[in-house]
Length: 138
Image (cartoon, rainbow, N blue to C red; front, side, top):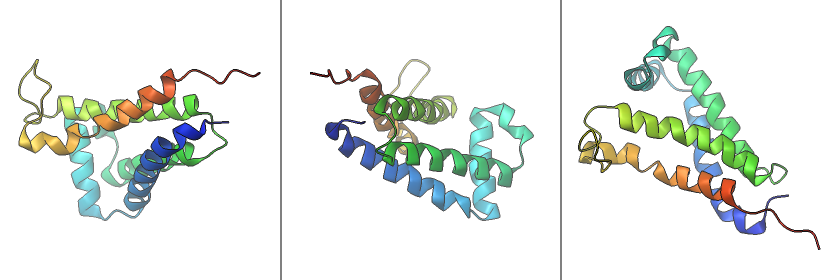
């Protein structure tokens, strides 16, 4: 059973990610092409998928991660692990996309990179969920 103190971060991140996944589920062709193009720029192996298939898979992944975070039946460490994988992919997109950060060793975002860099909050939440100690039974 998750801690009550985990509820605010799980609700905030879970609702945000679930909404994003539900929105992508019915993405139009132009949106799918845009999202796929950005992803392929950072992760070239994704070029083997067509844009609608990629966006549908991304949608399913977001719905799954969001649902894990929102479910009180899912342990916080498991939800945190799923979120860590998801946020790692987002931060990889930030790091691998040219023009989003100031240089090869400077993590600070450029004005164009702020929209991607802000996903660091998800990594912070994942770390918190993964590092919490378990309750001790008395």
